[in-house]
Length: 477
Ligand code: 5AD
Ligand code: SF4
Image 1: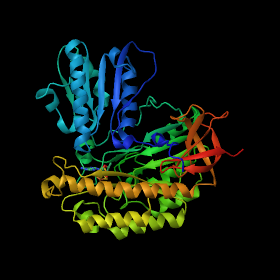
Image 2: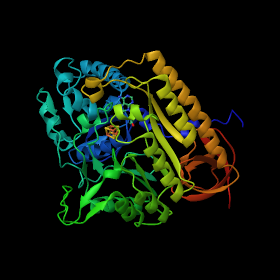
Image 3: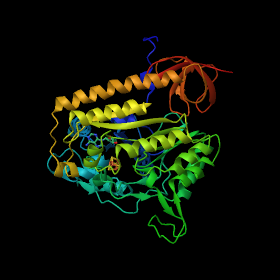
Image 4: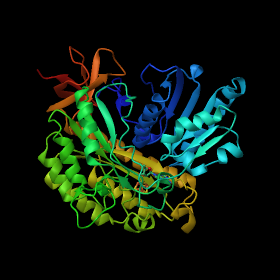
């Protein structure tokens, strides 16, 4: 393997809390600078926010210095995510000190968690808006024009923004997110999301399929259906409400997946995030049935030890999780699987940690997002357990799982060498203007000579070398 050819940057890092700057259409007079942090759901929400603001006189801009309004769509999942955002807000505060007209607002999970605290105690922002209150943003911005502060952190049991057509802020015009549900009812003991995003609710499947069709007609070739727990998607057909009437037929996630897959065989369908306690055989069967539903499942395990999983309130055991992996592999032998892992959760012993290590060795994940446990205020774990694993132990365990995953990712990529794969071209490689990159169905990243290929094309490639993150390949004509 040639170590100089390192294309690691092509890999999707969005869930690791990277900030992204986004740009919209250019028709309005005022300028909005919008920065997003955290999970894919937040990036999808920013597209709803851009849409709402564009109906009310604001274009998005890349240049923060020309902004009339700065909005940060924030993440609370771990403490360091919040620290980064606070630092950013302090930088924007300096801009406000020299420009009295400039308004700064905070959106998303941190807004919901801290509510008006950011206005009152720290005076960092003018506007605080939670994830279910984006429709009120234009009015709230107006309120601040008279020097007031504005807050709306009401959570809703119904809001899905189903009727709002998102302004696509991605740059490739090929892959897009579609939000299919909001909130989470799971109450994993470590997680702040149920408090910041509220109760789970599903979106009308007709509007989801409509959005997928619209995207396809605009040239998009891949959609990712998003929810905190897509397997519990449920829609009641006849009442047109997501409140379930047991007497009426419902649309479940497998059926929704099929509806979206039928939009076009040229539209790839992905989804995230699956929950091991809810992932059904029917979902795996639907994936196997439709070639355009990608052979890739993100199935967070969090820990490989049943006792830790109990304390985490995950609702499954190690054996149950391994059975779900078996159910997937039986139906889709070449299905790639990724996961999330937390090291050093409350009371985690060395033995329990080794169960996570052994589970990783059994599953041989294609990709993993790995984190040291970070205690979050008000969560079940904070109230019930002591955060007693020393920081250096959490970090050592984290390094151990990261090293293991690196080896596993490399091994998995090596499986793809010297075989032909259909890849959707997403864009120009970050490392070389002469190369394009794209993914196969399993989400592995291939880099290949540009030739006459453009984003949105499907090409067949064959790889001759790889790193843990990227496969170097040639186009097979
Ligand atoms: N500490 C560390 N990681 C966490 N995650 C969620 N909450 C925490 C926390 N308090 C991780 C989980 C989840 C992913 C999105 O973030 O692994 O699946
Ligand atoms: Fe958090 Fe668990 Fe819901 Fe995921 S499923 S958002 S980890 S509570």
